[in-house]
Length: 228
Image 1 (cartoon, rainbow, N blue to C red):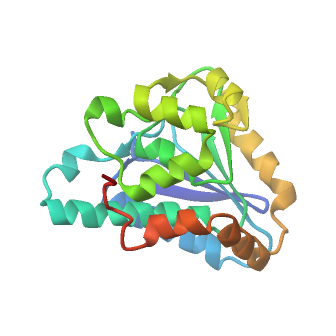
Image 2: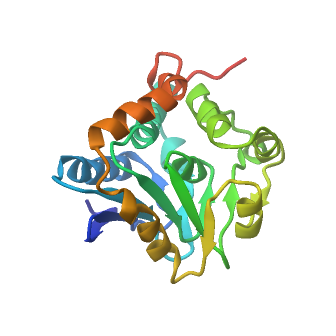
């Protein structure tokens, strides 16, 4: 798991992404899934915090790699990214993204796949810049964003490509709390610690009930389609 490092603080697993901008390519997705396997296969109480390092949480798709691929291969890879999002949406323990820095594009969507979000107060933006990149959102991505954001925030985030600061993100309900650089991971851990002993079976079933339509759009046959 060279791109990620998994540690524990009591019952709370901390998955730290450690590949710079933490862009999504096959190696990164494989490392994330391997770490999630370890959490899911653990016994006893558990919860999951994810974070990055330095000024980046994640900048999303590795476009330098993706643009070298044939269209079919690119879309197949995006399907694996959506499957990772779906896995986190329905993960059988409580999850929180500790946003230590910038969360752009797919990285912003990765935070939305978690149950909660805690954002660093003094540095970093939440941003969905696809309108400025000239990139469409496939169905699974669009539904994830729409499910997790207020309607007007969804509109503004998609149509303006705005960079939301921590204070803006808290005010608009994108994140649940903001903390100092040193406090963002501990705050996420403490938010989840009381939830770690909850039933995994109940958590999984309840999440699937809450997000059934979202999960279908993330994993179904139309997941990587571009709505006309």
